[in-house]
Amino acid sequence: MPLRRAALLLALCVAAAPGSARSVEAVKILGNLARPTFVTSAPGDASRLFFLEQHTGNVRIFDTDTGELLADPFLTVPAVAQGSEQGLLGLAFHPDYANNGLFYVDRTDALGNTQIERYQVSPTDPNRALATPTTLLGIAQPQANHNGGWLGFGPDGYLYASTGDGGSANDSGAGHTEPGGNAQDLTDNLLGKLLRIDVDSPPPAGQNYAVPASNPFVGRDGDDPIWAYGLRNPWRASFDRATGDLWIGDVGQNFTEEIDVQPAGSPGGENYGWRLREGVGPTPGTVGGAKPDGAIDPVYQYAHSGNPFGRSVIGGYVYRGPVPELQGQYFFGDSVTSGIWSITFDGSDPAEFDGSNFTSFLDWKDTLDPRHAIQTLSSFGEDALGNLYLVDLGNAFVPLSSDGGIYRVVPEPTTGALLVVGLVALGARRSRKTR
Image (cartoon, rainbow, N blue to C red):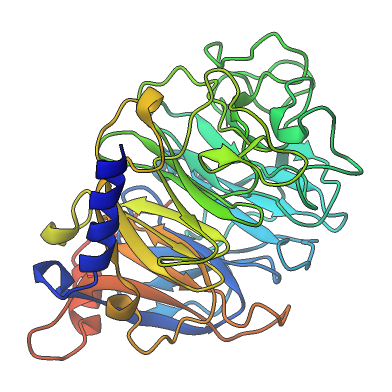
């Protein structure tokens, strides 16, 4: 193992050298946005991008046919909290959105609690949603930070949601259970978890969602929706559209950021170790401990010092878009340093995960953000065609700032001209869905 780690360290040093994998750039397609936190598209819809504004509660549309940002929001979600980690955080379109018009949002409400809600598009206007939601799930949050907030549909058709451990530090204090904290608590506690729910089957009385019978904790009172646990603040997850593997960026405490992988076909129930573990080791201080039996270590981790370094990981995507040399690379970043990196998973079995389960590492900061214009990387995004996006929150210290932006990763033009016109033309060739 020491030789393997030494080889990986050498790879980190040489990865920054220019090469054939550098023929891409990030083109800014939108600016002057109010704290954007996420961007995506509806299934099969290559003509529109939907993005979230954290504290306005707006879901807005960028029309790639015309290159126009629509003036009116697709939806304004009411009563979102405006703390630094609170607000409108997650968006997922139903796989059959083109026919049923259903989509889902994750927000923290005015009291700071998580609400996962279902909305529907207007039957007469594909660019407007009906204003009345149905609440699927509400989760009390003891503190204002660590809200998770990612939503996504898996290859199995179920809706997945990430939740943080409830906030504060070390998953301890008011609103945190002992021993082990919320993330390790499997007694009617949805904090520090990955949830999986069925939004298509008839729900039981008094509930607006069903629980898949194959969930690992079915029958434990209050724990039925839990799919995996032991997470601190899973800020962005994604499914590899080619393999079905689930990737999770889990924000660390004071020392280590981590990337977790759940291979496709997993029966669920994974324990990712927090609060006992931060990365592959015991959490420093009073709450750390031995690795729980069967717990899963990350496939990659980085420290809050050294190179590469950062302080708050942003989970991203395995690239499956139109640029051949990026295929199979998992892109992720950091919100404090706005670092942008990629790794290639080596396919190890989860029992062998030890933080070094990758065959390549590349640092993309100076390639995709050469002028370091991105102030606060808040998310990555993926559209219907597999294009990769970078989301800049803007000034993170101004609650209602409007200097955020969205960038698209594209092949570097040989003429030096930007590809905006070509990208708009690409969108124009694809018919827009009515839902």
